[in-house]
Length: 343
Image 1 (tube, rainbow, N blue to C red):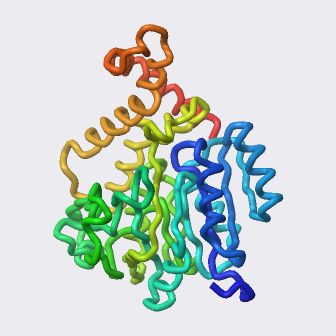
Image 2 (cartoon, rainbow, N blue to C red; image 1 turned 90 degrees about the vertical axis):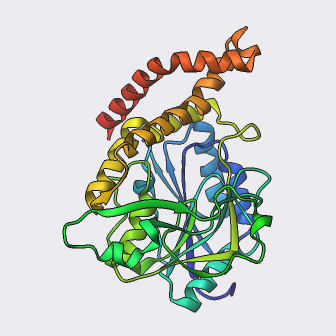
């Protein structure tokens, strides 16, 4: 990337589900971008230690820091970032991502050479970084017939089937099989967007509170006559909460809100109604169960492990966490209600 020309891209960093990887992810970002890149960090009520770190680092690094004293939904945060960006492209990234060399340059090259409005990298998950595929492009139309899916304006429901290509496979299994191509959808762990596409799609939909906002955006881009591309030479890794990088206790309130059953249910019902999606009858209920399981694994089990006697035995901790789920669900509803009243 030409270090003397005007910046082509602004990297917009937002919080996915926690704050604990803020320093590690931001260090990795600056290790893998040049000097001629704008950076905007959107901070939605991070705890005091992270707030202070971001304020110090913004001064030292020269990035734009936008702070709000309340938790932000993903699309709220991204829209704030877009409003602050002045470049041709914006790259949305989460605050728990580890980067590899050339990730941004390769996304921009794909956009410039193909005219793509949106470019998705090869997104991996877990540790060691860049070893297991999370998303190598994907589809949302049953049978992959995206154009027919988008064009369905006769009142009929659109048959919906989310597919993430390569999900869970080792990167080595796909060596020589991945190529630059048009794909159905991006994910917001990391994605490059030509900024003027928002003149056609409008801002990101803030009624999607916690989930499937990437599918809504991908559909909107295609409906606007633009394309989403997959660029495998750009590689990043999303580090989900795990033994090596567990949630910190100060992450629990935000994690509980992000993966609340209420936020998930509202988001899914809005997406289904907005796009007239035909889903399985139990689709929303299945997803609510997944969100409850995430909260159990991310919060309840670690909480039980801190109790004397119970925490000494992993099996006892899991049993205690399951027994506590009804209470947790009540608390989760209260957290959502409190946040709704503040918003």
